[in-house]
Image (cartoon, rainbow, N blue to C red; front, side):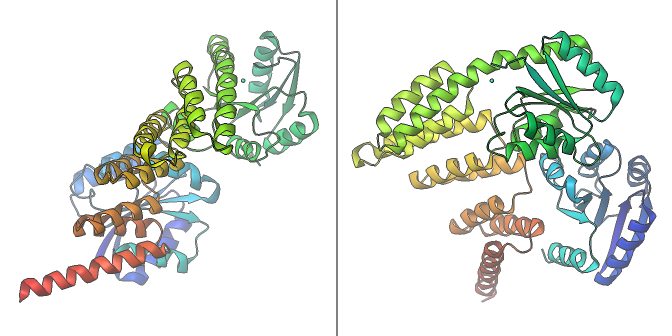
Length: 428
């Protein structure tokens, strides 16, 4: 079979590597571009049907605009799109581009020809803050001086300075008891801001430290996506920033702290009552909590947990319905938390709400489409209810994301067998 591929990558060595690997899957014609603008113009004017598009993440933030264009053009809307990214960018890209660009797969460089070919074959086969001390992490000395001046003017008595994430984490280890707030740049050498944030959130004794990310990225929505989906930044700033903007963000963080502390008190009480086997008292406590703090996703989620802990038969169904409502409220407040999606899905499964199960999975996959486990669950529901074409489509997508998903492989083979049986019956 003949294929036509478009490669958008400024690196000639990588383009040559891709050509070599693509040649192993059959006859493939190529069109290569150094940047998105040239590629977009050519796709609009040429009119040739495209099978594959390889897009380098190292290009500018026009990536997103190009992806949206590709999905609207007749010549490329059915093409399989691959993002080529460094390992450190992998999770970031999943969060950002899974939102609506409908990326079919991600290639992580440095990639080996064998691994790349396997991917292609799989696709083809179908917070009250103490102002005593703040840690400032910024590699740009000029920006660091400005931020230090601002922080000092806001009343911080001591500003510890670091030039990258590694240095910042070492200072945190040394002065953890003193540091009340961390302000970090996103883009830095060695360990960047996101890597530092993950490291802090994954270290229990530092996980509760308040963190503000400073970034030069132009899209606030991208930052919000990361914030919700991954590690929970307390705030974000866009460069270039001014005193008014920075102070406003700091004031916003301060105002949130009392609410956070209040929510934590309710959470502790509620979870303790659940652990003690008293879900009804936990429901009462957490209901009071969400009444006081209706925008706390964590409180709504804990209320759902309490409702699902009810075991008496006479109250079980009512409690599960209340739990489903609480989980869905929590999910609306924190729409990219996969564990919440699973809780919603599971409680609706117990209640026998098939349509709600499908709705929840589809809604989440529209926001973050590169989750092969959720796609597999959606495919399984379709299969169980006799929607074979829909099941095939979702299972195929799951395998495009992760060819090694054994459950998706097994279910996909079942779908193919059922289709074959149906075709034989129709032929008879």
